[in-house]
Structure formats: C-alpha cells, structure tokens
Length: 177
Length: 240
Image 1 (cartoon, rainbow over the protein chains, first blue to last red):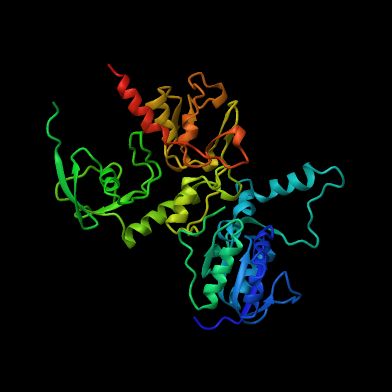
Image 2: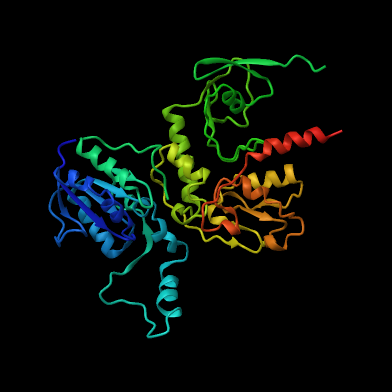
C-alpha cells in the first residue's frame, strides 16, 4: 500500500459517537496528525469533498438520498474506504426503522407524538430512503471496524496500521456493540 | 460390571486420539483440548445440531458434518479448522445476524452474548447478505422474564432445558424455517402459561438477549448456564 498522506472523515446516519471516539484518542491525535493531513471532516471547515483522498473513515449508515449521493462521491475519490462503527457496518440503531417502514416512523415522530403544528418535514431536509443500508451494500468497502463506537484504541490501531502500509486485522479483538 | 468400553481410534487435525464409541466428535475433540466453536450445544443438554457452527470436515464425507451430533468411528480423519470450514462458519454466523434484528448496541445482552462473541472470535466483521429486518414480537407478559424474538437464534436451548431438566415442557417451537418462533404452551402469552414454573432456567441458558430477566433489562445480563451439568449429576444420583 502506498503512502497515506490525506485523511477524511464523514458522518452519515449515525450519532457522532464514532467521531467522539476518534477525538478520544487524545494526545495520540497529535502524533497521528503529523503524518497526514485531515482534508475533509465534520471537524474541519472544508465544504466539498477533495478530488483525491487516501483514507476516508465513514461513520453512519446510508439512510437518505443525501447520504447515498455523498457516499458514492466519496467512494469515487477515496483510495481506502473504512466503515467505522456498527451503523456503517450493520445499519445498527439507524436501521431499526426498517422493520416498520419509513412512513409509519415519520408519522409517529412528526405527527402523532407532536402537540404543536404536527407535520412531516420536507423542506431543507433530504428525503429518507425506504430502507437504511450498511455502507458496503451501496459501495465497496475496504476495511471494516466494528464497535458502537469503536474504542479510541481500536481507531488508533486501524490508523497506525494503515499509515504503516498494512491492512488492519481486527479479528478476535473487536466486537459489535 | 460394565463391559470394557469400546474404544475407537481416530485422528483430529492429524493427531491420533482415542475416544469411546458412544462419544461425538465434539466430545472427543474437547477432551483433547481441540476447540470447536458451538452455539446450540450446551453441556448438560441433549444435542440437536441446530446451529451448524460446529461443522467439521470428515475425510470421505461429501459435506461438512456437525461435530456435536456425529459419532466417532474407527479410522475417522477429522479436520476442525481450514479455510473452507472458517468460510462456512462465518457464513452461518452472517445468516444468523441477517435473519433477525440483532442490534448489539442496544441489546440487554451486549457484552454477555454468545452470538456477539462468536462473531468477534471468528472474525466476522460484517454481513454480506442483505438483512431481513423482520417484524417480530416481544412478550413481556411474564412478571419476571421477557422473550424478545428479535434476538432469538432458534438454538432451542430453552426448549431442551425446560423439557429435560425442569420437566415442565412449557417451551416449544412453532412454524418452519426462518419464520419459526419459540413459544410458551400453545403460543399463549408467557405470563398466562399454566405449565411454566418460573424457574428461570431457560433464561440462564439462552445464549443471546432473547430471554432475559426484567430486573436486569438495560444493564449487563450475565447468564449462568454452568449449573446444568451439576443439576444433571445430582438428579442421576437420586434415581432408584
């Protein structure tokens, strides 16, 4: 694997817990950040996804038309795509609505349980997909990192191994949940 | 005086071992410290070969055989680990995860689940087949216990322990294939069951978060299936 110079992180349908875990690496972030540049992330200000990124960490499942558009573009411009955490890997909590269908869930949340101006929002928010999918159901994924969220140690191990040019092996070390 | 035990000689992963003729491959392997992963098997209960996680290769057999229900035979050559076996075991695990709603992060058994730890030890990091997301009921009618069919792997440990150890025969299985459900009595709510003695053995042997104690919901549920061999031995001692 050739050298890793740029890193991106994206946040699809997840709770941001994986990004919190990323930040939880504490001082190890300083060590890692000297080795690559964080070019796109909810943690930095850049608005558009760069043309070429070496490693992208994806948090969250694919749940809306916007997520779908984003992940396709990201895959196109990323060398190593990492599914980070259970939502990206399994759908997790985001996909729990799949058993009921999207309309009943929207009605329940935005109409039946609301006292003032009940209405399903349609303006300024992307339409939800009928079915929430794990990332690898939509685009090919190179590395899978289970955990809800994966621990800071796990993320550090994954990034260190990728920087060293290895494909991380996590069998027996990490579990779902 | 019982007759001299009937000994069979076989090889497991190339190592020659001896086993009693009435032993299964799983028993013989474990006696010789060869690990074979299992899910529906539980020491103290009868074997059903329901989960197929313990599949092994037997030379000459055209398909993989479940070690828990395959008896040893003279000259048998058994392989317990190979890329092919690993692939099948992972695939079986993926089918379990895809078939129902195993959301580890919000499950009462998170951290104490045999399905979850099998996925970790066998290196199953994601599921290739599409998830089914079935709509399944949760029965919380019993005052102390809950059954959540979303987490059930149909291992039938609950059915066996209820019949073989408690003798109540409350649990059974209805339906076919993926739509099967474990049920209490004739699919009555668990709380209305007239046969259930509320002993809780089914809860203790359940490998996942399908059966759990209400007081423990939302916290880590540690189960204690290890009492079974002890109960069984004590009862055998009681028999005239």
